[in-house]
Image (tube, rainbow, N blue to C red):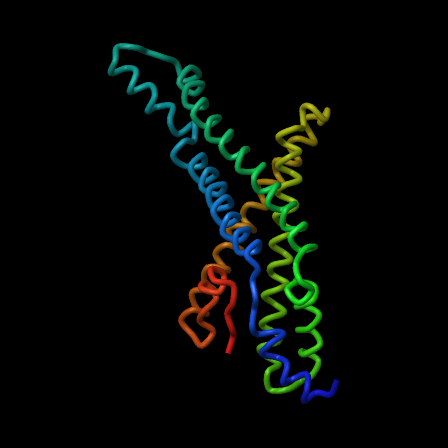
Length: 224
């Protein structure tokens, strides 16, 4: 196939994105579960931070004629934090399941809709060095960012499962703390991805590339 034929096939193979029903359902379900998971972390780091609520618990009980020590107040406030972490844990299980299901969906996808195929096609067009080279580079960078997202999600799922079942698996405290640190650091990369993704979609929807959101709803969009 010569360069002319390849270029003529751009619109159908690269810049017109088709999304199967499974991908669309997976995308929005993952968005909701991931958002809820990140929100639980933010709530526990702010509103339900046990040490920040010690004085609140003491003052509330004092108003009822009950005096408690800081240690006792901490135990009460910590209980609410634990409840929220239990919610976070359940959401984490949901994300692990969604990650596994994404692998299965990828295997069931038509070949032209697989990430590997789209990246391969984009790389082939990138080598053409024609006037669309900037678009090819942008497409490749977006797909690479998605791959990075899946890698971060995988590491978060593995470390999260390690924290959830570490005791049953016989993990010592040092390993537990290491997993906790990695899991905590990865969340900031996830915040960054979500922010970049939302900003990118916002600018695309307000430019000639509009249609990304509707495409993830109805299954098709074209980048012109």
